[in-house]
Length: 384
Image 1: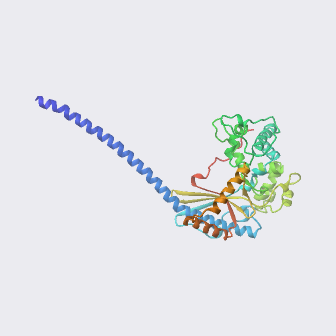
Image 2 (image 1 turned 120 degrees about the vertical axis):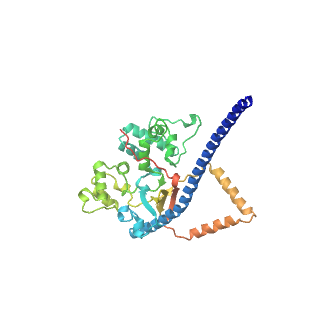
Image 3 (image 1 turned 135 degrees about the vertical axis):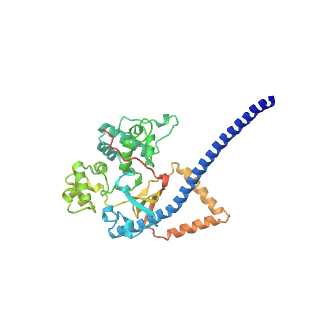
């Protein structure tokens, strides 16, 4: 009987060990299944993206072809009201079975080009936001001081970037990104909240100012802020222009229209304002393409500039002597090198030469795909 008594605790201990082992094994198996499921989802998403990506670029090429037809026929692109708002339907193109393709446009040249935004224009813009004149001038002042070489500040602001924890200096060239505003004295307090996140003023600036370079904004797609800042148009004048473009109010019988010359702009707007400060053609057009198949989707965003249109703001080297020395060294190296070109280099050179022989009608200023495409909230008008 004593033998039976001593075996029971032993068997109980073994049973506990087995149960604990099963628990750990179950947990490990569950974690493994979850990880495998996540990995599988990633693989499926990447496979879907590869399939839908080709469809997106096909839709982009069709869109470019339609845009070029209208550009040649109308001596430039003015507004989607011309008839190219749905380019795929116009071309009679349809995606593969089970897929849906959406094309949307945003005229980047309807904004104020940052390289052309002087102190007066920026001050007018911020006053159009219902800022106090002194605050508007101060904000314009710090932005101009950030972008221009040898700039003399016109307000009481005196940025001391050299005294920062990590010292830096004004780059003295146009903004390259909107988040650059976070580095500008006073501007960072206006465009970002206490947590460092973009606020309503930030998104309004994004909606009004472009980072691309072109002479004048397109009046056909300019919003009231841009009309006020560049053309000094009041609310009633801006409403007249919008009514003409949308075929509303006294222009309801005409339907949607678009401006083709400053004279018509001045006639519609009425007395006052500066119609000559605007262009009537598109210099930089953002094309947003979304391909859907079931629950899968793929997004593509490209900014296209027609011949003679917008360009990217470029900055010369800050140290011209060093740049020239580097360039000279590189040139000498290329001349004296005896190494034979690789097959990859040869292929690249052949492709480059071939691309130069193609008379492509647009320059791609920007190309973003999927997660690289920013998704800002809709612009919110801040309270004055």
